[in-house]
Length: 548
Image 1 (tube, one colour):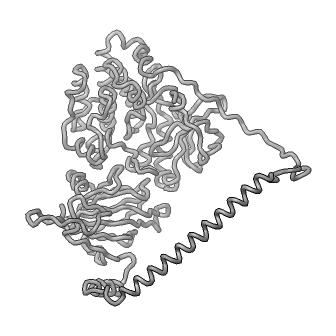
Image 2: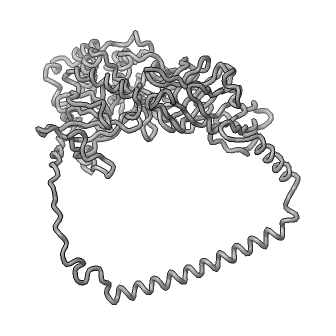
Image 3: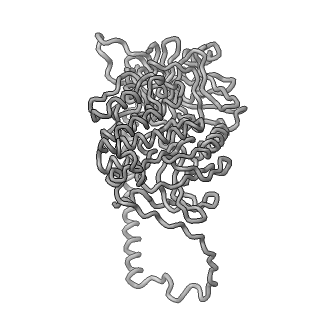
């Protein structure tokens, strides 16, 4: 597959034919906000057209944020940014268009050729830092700076997707479960839901540049929760980085945001190391090596021409779909074979049913045991107590473990008597909450209003959020089937008692630490927040008792 095919992917049946007059010519990719297409202006200039996905477009709070961020992004003018040239945050669906940058992303370039040389990393950091200066000057924090959001043009890097990550509040899931904020390139304060500032982007710049120098993420790979734990709790391993770059990386990756270098300091530091090369206008020799050959951009899609159908005469034409003698013979043979197969299958089914009936009749008088009688009694009692929304299923301690999740299988081997007893696991599905009905953690069966750590749905002018007075809440980035151990790790340094639901979709998972010592996992199955006065959530709740 050639490079052009890697960059420009064919359109699919579900792709739009036109968006506000822009006609998509090819797919460029997809992200947390939506799908990106190559299109063209009326004058034929190529643009990257981003169409917002329906889950976000239906959220009025998202539209408000998106409108504000688009307005700010229009003001950004920088040599190392992809200019926003058109947008409609009130469209159906919302969309925006930026100038198309003919060059691979940093992630693609590293995947193709491996780690970048020191000079290229210096050019990269200087260009991206200059882009951040222009972005931050308009009061925008990128929040999702990573290798796929840095394009390598022939004259230097270009930062894209600035000014729109905040519209989704940095916590949204894509249709496939990925997040707008990317775990491997987050700052510690972003990972634990703290305040996000311009210094957060500097940490992401350090991680992005380290990826370029190493050919892999600085904090390793694996499940997002494990990567975030390392980012929050461990110092960056700089010994593998080129020695001339380590002082700058140490400044960018400082745990305390106030100790990080500013974008202006990064630009100045890099240009001092480049020396005379800094005046060559983007280091063309370095960039030619890493960007590869120039790719031919597909031509604009022509306007469709009206087709007038020709009247049908002499229909059907002579011999149309008339089978030959050989075809008629083949059809008869196939029909005969199918009839024989159907008769044989019917006979086999009758025999199986007859044998099953005889076998059941022969054993009906001896099969029921005392254990069966006990199970029947328990089942009858359960049915009498009622079911529905507050139905409760409890797993015994012998069925639970530290890695128990919503899909734990009862009947697993019991731990030895010398092992500490695992926490009891309670599961509730469906679990419901709205503005007037909280979801209890300590007593989910009906005493939620007395539970100070209960989960509540709070919808304000800024949108809906998952709130709790005393419980700690944190969203799991990119997680599915989160375990107790993962919740314990990510909750260790978390402090937030409220988490916005903007962009959250079915499958979004939240870990909750209740003041009683219980740890819970709430998985959204249905989210309805388009009308705040009637908003509700429904999902699956798993509670590990005394597990904190």
